[in-house]
Length: 206
Length: 355
Image (cartoon, rainbow over all chains, first blue to last red; front, side):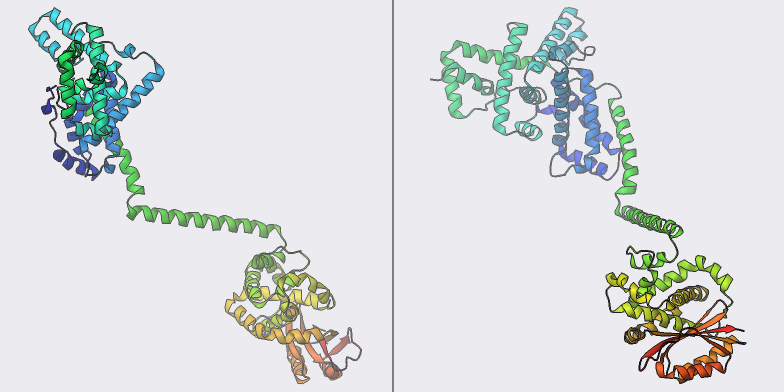
C-alpha cells in the first residue's frame, strides 16, 4: 500500500515547543495555539476510534484539559504531539471501556452519527455534484467502513486508525501507543485483514 | 512452499514493502500459485482505497473556544492554590505561621486547663504540682517544699505568683507586719526555716519525701511556723516581686542545706518561749543580739499576726542565760522547756508579743 499520506501531519514538534514552554511558565493563552494546531487530528483519532462524533468531541475536550493540567510534567526531550495524542488515545480507550460495560452492542452507538459528519470526502464531492443517489451511496459506504473499523478489537483498531487513516509513521505509532515495532506491524496486519473481511461481508464484493 | 495461512499475515504488509527479502519472496512465490491469496491481496488493496476515502472530520465551530474556556477556568483555580502553597517564599512563611499558631494554641489550652486546675485545687498543692509535676497527696505540701534547692526555686517563684490571690486576703488580714528593713532578714530566716526542713530531705530522693512526714511530726511547733513562713515568703515575694531576692534567697539557702541537715538531725529538743514586750521591733532586735551572743545558729525571724517569732538553734547550755536575758526585756513565759539537753542544740522558738 503506497497510499500513506504524510502531508496529513502539518505541525512540527519544534513549533509546538515554544508554546509549551510558555504554558509551563504560566501563559495560559499560549495553549490556544496548541489547541488550534492539534484539535482536528485529535478529534479524528477519537472519532474513528469511537465511531461517534459527539462523544469524540467530549473526549477531545477532556483530553485537552488534562493535557493543560499536566503540561508542567511534559519534558522537552519528548515530542509534544506524541505526548498529547497519547492522552487522547488513553481517554478514548477509557471511554470505550465505559461504553462496553454499559452496552454489549457497539453497533448501537453506531448510527449515522451527527448529521453527515461521518467524514466522507466522496460524500462531500457527491453532494457538490448534486447527485443524491451517489451521495447516499457514498454516505452509506462511509458508514459501513466506520462500522467495520469500530467492529475491530481495540488494539487493532488503534493501529489501523493511526496508520491507515491518520498517517502516522511506525515510529510515531510506537511512541504514542508505546508498543514495540514488531507489535505495531503484526497488529496492523491483522487489522487490515479483519477490515477487509468485514467490508466484504458488509458491502459485498469490493 | 508456504500455505495460505502463513501468507495471510504477510499480505497486508507486502504492498508497503515492510517485509524482509525472504518473506517477500515467499509471498510472491505463493501468489504465483494461489488464486485465493491473489484475490485476498486485491481485496486488501480495495479496502485500503475505501479507507482512504474517509477524510477527516472537522471540529465543530467554537470548539477551540470551548476548550480554552475550560482551560482558563482551570488556570484560575491553579493560580490561587499555587500562590499560596507552592512558591517557597510564601509557602514557608505560611507554614511557619501555621506552626506558631498551633503551638500558641496548644500552650494556651494547656495553661487554661491549668488555670481551671488552680481554681479547683487547694492553693498549697498547686505550686508543688506545677513545679514537680508529680502526683502528691494534699497532706504533705511541706514535704515538697523540702525538695532540692532548684526545685524549690521554681516553687518559690510559683508560690509567689500563684498564691498571690489566695494569700492576698491573709496578707490584708494579718499583714500588719512591717515589710521594710526586716524583709531581707525575714526572707533569709524563712529560707533557713524551710531549709531545715529541706535539709531533712535534701539527701533523700524525691520518692522518699512521704517517708519524711514522721520526722516532721516530731516538730509540731515548727509545722505551723513553717507554714506561716512559707506564706510569708509567698506574701513577700508577691509584694516585692522579687525574683532577684528569691534567687538570692536560695543561693544562700543552698550551701546552708548540708550543714543544717546535719544540725537539724540532731536538733530534736525544742523550747518554746513567749516574751511580752511593749515594742516588738526593738525587742526583736534585742533578742537577736542575745541569741547571737549565745552562739545561736540559724536564727530566723518571722512577723505574723502582730507578733514576731524567732527561731534558732541554741546550745543547750546557753538556754538558761538566754532566758534570763530575755526576762530583762519583758514578761517571759516558758512553754515547753526540755530537760537538760547536755551537749546538744535546742531548737528555740521565741515569740515576741505585745503586752
